Amino acid sequence: MSDYKLTANVRNDLGKGASRRLRRANQQVPAIIYGGEKTPQPIAVDKTAFYKALEEEAFFSSVITLEVDGKAQQVVVRDLQRHPYKPLVTHADFLRVDATHEITMRVPLHVVGQDESKALKEQDGELHQLANDVEISCLPKDLPDYLEVDISGLELGSTLHLSDLKAPAGVTVVELTYGEDHDQAIVNVTKAKAMQSDEEAAEDEAAAADASADAAEEAKNEGEEGDKE
Image (tube, rainbow, N blue to C red; front, side, top):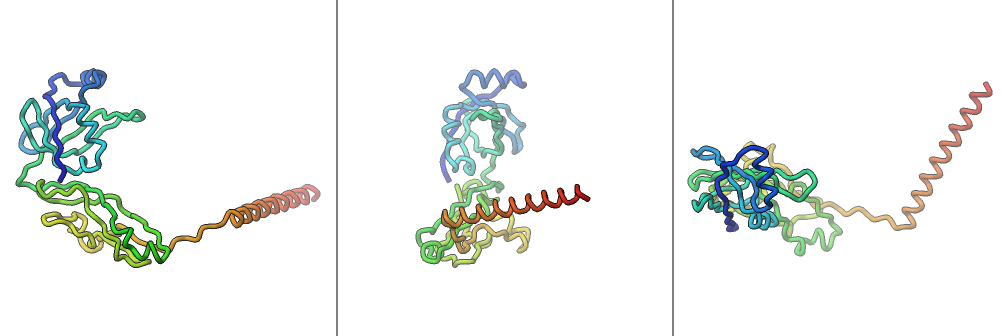
């Protein structure tokens, strides 16, 4: 689990206008902390450290130490609101976590073992990743940055499912708790499709153009015969 720390202060000036003023100052990001037994708390997060953390994938699946007016608490990112066309976060939602209670999060799937895969290296296989992340449940201390999908032994034409994941101790794949019919596929390796040469592609394109021209000519002739009748 990665170690992230952010600083913030309590935000007493509330409302859309206050949030706009805060964003225009370009030093803090409007946010809120909720969850647990405490009431929701509007805050303003230091922008520089926050934006730096956003560049790392692990930030979104990590427990974050958030210091609000000098008091530290443990949170995870629950939601981000972004500007429709500018690379800006307009608001962030943080969820409080309790060390004694499990949390449910989505974590990325990282495919490994490509260099050792005979299906890819020797059998002209093509890898298809069917899922980019997975929902897990665990105590905050057991939260992984990601789960690995090892394809080193995957044969050509075979598929790996959620049940093939080797989750760390204390980590449960949520989908599997619903039954075997929820054991979705996450990666497979199929025979790579043969690539057409430029000459073959040109021939196919010419043939399609000829067929289109023939159809147009036939339709024209039919139209002329109809007019004569």
